[in-house]
Image (cartoon, rainbow, N blue to C red; front, side, top):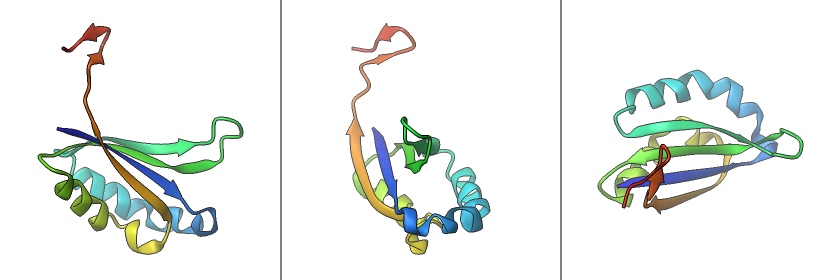
Length: 98
């Protein structure tokens, strides 16, 4: 099952990003078998940092929650909110999947 994890960042804690980015990226690399894609989100109007998104392959939501909790960004307060959504992919690479 694929999950989409949406992170909204707290602008007041933006300084935590640079300080913890090396640990965060190493964490993503260690979990590459489950975290299929990850990256920052920016405001489409002005490009300001808005948060991030992960695509995670897991059997259950609990496994995704455990990943979120283990992320080095988690204890910094950078993440204002986290949403975990199940994704049913029905179209990719120009083709219907169902």
